[in-house]
Image (cartoon, rainbow, N blue to C red; front, side):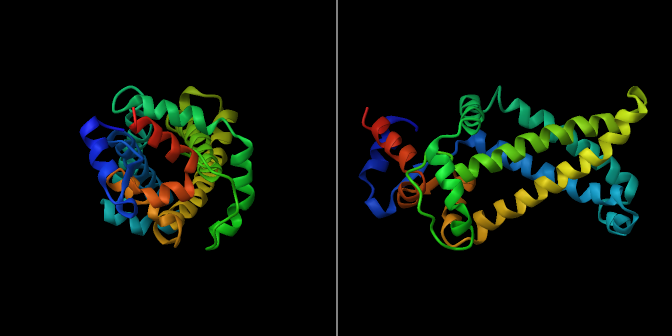
Length: 232
């Protein structure tokens, strides 16, 4: 959570104005690099996918430049984010990866109540950890979507190295994976920017901190653990 001086400052803040460090600088860099690369891949990929979008590629300097940007963004999408598991607060990245593959009863109860929360209410679910059930599902979509996009994209890029049948399958796998990730991204953006309850999480990805009120309401298990760690 930071050094002892920081802990004391946070502990002395009024309860309603207290802030809790949710994401480190390394986690935030990883998130935004991934997001920017993803949308560059999406927009340039639309021009590559369909001639209907090619006139729009003039903003990149034409379809050929868009192809180069697409491949460059693909490298960033894979390599830079992968490096964050080695540098830039790697322990937090590994903690996230481990946690999203471990679903508890509380996580499933959150998933069950999530539709109500998605449409503006507050679902009835037990206290959640740092990542709730809905966030874990979003993370899994991101992980598997990124994997299939990367593998299929590599096959398409280096098509002469692979059997024709594998290349043919790579195209629908690539497109379907992207559509799945776009749907998840739209939901993620809605919850983080527009949703009246959960948009309080957005500062966590901007400056690292969320309010103690939000942390208690949405991630009580994690919040209680952080409070215990601060006392030692």
